[in-house]
Length: 305
Image (cartoon, rainbow, N blue to C red):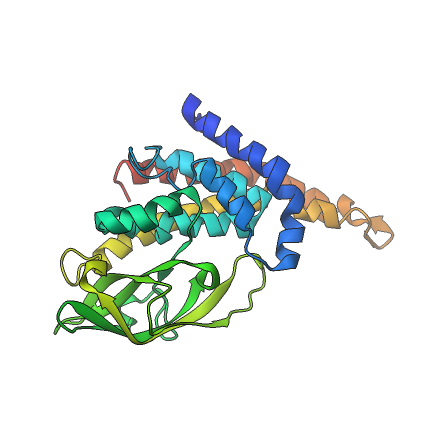
């Protein structure tokens, strides 16, 4: 069994492979060692249509999830930092704006973000709440025409460079999750300390806090107060597929091959042992992973889990 992309899917994959090969991969080490957000390449990904790919026309390109997976795999082959930044922008940073934002915010924030001119981030994880959505403690209190947000978030991808944030907070007597749009300029929003990671150094990540942060009612993205959890779970299911695609792209980067040729063990080149095993595993596992990622994307498009 093998994956046979359509002509359109192959064209998208080829486009992002050329971009990664000519502009991203040659600078991958430089990007991470510089520890600076790759804004130029980020904008170029937007120009190529990546951020608008998942959304229907006229704002988006109307491409399927498989095409999106193939594009991100190629970007991850070039630079995982850039691929992760682009994923957060198109998967979570703009998704809720596209679904629920008012026309004014769509025009002012969403459209520039789809071009790569603005950066969006999502605030879900907290110091005591990760995958357990029930542990989210950030509160939103209705103050009549505006909402008062208090709480702290952590592991906020792109926070140091983000222009706006999609925030999940508990509201109402039942304290269910509600979605809010918070702009960087809002008083009471504080970008906290950067978080040091083992890799992806060109993708800034930090803590974030809300201290008496007032948000206008027009920026409550939830159409029904407390509907945030159901929308968030759907997005989290899709990000598992995207994470697999990026892992696949990294596996194709052949990092091991570049580090082993000059090493010897017991007077024998490492490439005769470790390198050979690595190449054998790569030969068999990459096609299997490609099939798994594209099959999961196809199932997601069809509405299957």
